Amino acid sequence: MRKVPLGRTGLEVSEVAFGGIPIQRLSHDDAVAVVRGCLNLGITLLDTAHGYTTSEERIGAAIAGRRDRVVLASKTPASTAAEAEAHLAESLRRLDVSHIDLYQLHGVSDAERWRQVTAPGGPLGVLRSAQRSGVIGHIGITSHQVDVAKEAVRSGYFATVMFPLNFVAREPGLELLEVCRETGVAFLAMKPMGGGMLENARLAFSFLRQYPDVIPVVGIERLSEMAEIVALYDTAPALGERDQQEMERIRQELGTSFCRRCDYCQPCAAGIRISTVLNVPAMMRRMPPESIFGQGWARAAVDSVADCQDCGECETRCPYKLPIRARMKEVVAMYREAEAAWRT
Ligand code: SF4
Ligand code: SF4
Image 1 (cartoon, rainbow, N blue to C red):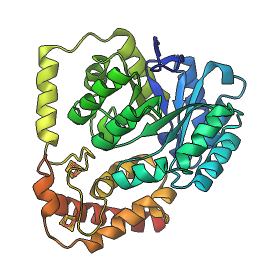
Image 2: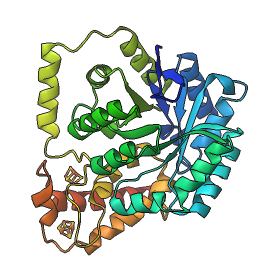
Image 3: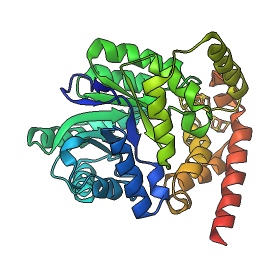
Image 4: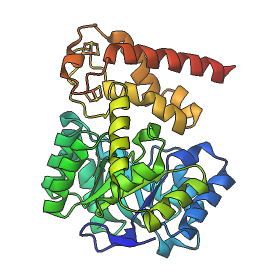
């Protein structure tokens, strides 16, 4: 696996990164084996998050004895300084390390949250102080909203930004990539396979390989999936005319069903986080059921749909003309049914 610079950090990482969401669904031993297998394939950038339940602990176990060969990234969803301090301490403990190479502010996707994390005495201040004392190497940010992400990249606070990019949801990511190139901020691509919506790995990664400074963060459960992607990066030819046509066909097909998480549908009069609701089915496939059906973000999002006032404003603003209200109702029905099956 080829190594590429991680922006201006001075670090070099594999051109594909490991994403730590799906290993939550495995047993501890299987998860450790998958991470070690990925290291053996040449993956050197491992990304996880404080919010991914067992993921940090499993990655920590997998890198024991190999810490110096990996670049470790994690994140905090903190809104306050106290939360950021607690999350960082817990990430270090779970990963069983004294230093995290990249610690990111997680899910900063609206103006209010941007104000929260950058407020004086807030989470960013905690991370900057941890960086000065050497506990973290660099500070990054993750976002689903392109205007917030661009502001973050231009702010000069961050070494990396993680943002969705795949051949279906490409425009906002490519817009952000231009700003990253101007500023030297590294672009980490989340959802390279559209959060599970895209099945053709060859197409998905051939698309991303066109941008050698984009590092996809790939969440996998089976080592064979990562082996396939590594082989694609090592050998696959450039996109041909037929590939372009096939991508266009898939774009058209997903056009009215695929939420790009751009948040152009906001603001919602009822305060519903529409893109979060529409993302619940993809996360149901990737996250452990206890975190989906517990008292967390997924339940809160699904429950909030009951507040919809049926005004239809969101649908007039969605550039992809998604039938948002109908899709939200489908998500609620799917969630309730899956929850009932899980509880029996
Ligand atoms: S239709 Fe419902 S979800 Fe859409 S903006 Fe109105 S209240 Fe919000
Ligand atoms: S519903 Fe439409 S506007 Fe809202 S986040 Fe999804 S794709 Fe964007």
